[in-house]
Image (cartoon, rainbow, N blue to C red; front, side):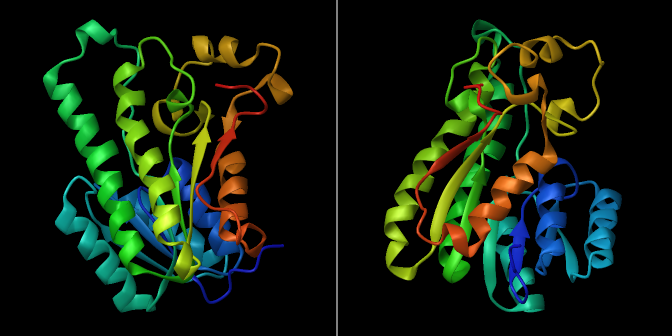
Length: 251
């Protein structure tokens, strides 16, 4: 079992969904956890309470990753409470899918690129400056950056730039022993646009096709498994990599 005792993990967008699952997984392995949220304080407090029930220590920090000053304050508050930050997970993002490319508006473009691209870029940059030597930096992206999907052009485009940044950072931080990796989840039940959706949603038919283990949607625990691996000593020499969490499918 992974031992993260004494380590501190900062996870953006960790009040619910994938970020919450990663926070709880790290807590169950002994880590202190910085729970970040943009607006849902109640959900963040619930996640922090669950972290502490698992034996970890937690703080909640409201910070909007679309605001660079907020990102800096998030890391400052984490360091003030726990000292060194050992693991940083750039998870916060917003989904907007099901829109034809020709119908994308400037307002929609600005919103997604401000959060998913700019916000993640500066989260990764701040993590690169603040994470301790031999630490871990993770980016939670999307399989839409690996396989183009019709009507997801805006979302996929906004998520692809940080993948490049990850591969650059992996080289620039190698001398410090810091690993930087990307996780690309498929459609995940209980996360993003799939937090609450009709059981007959077309995505269920899509993921039930041959070529996927169990012919099911992914779960937040599937993603937490990958995040645990990248945070562990087993991945100390794995950096600049992209891991698809898709059950064997390419989407």
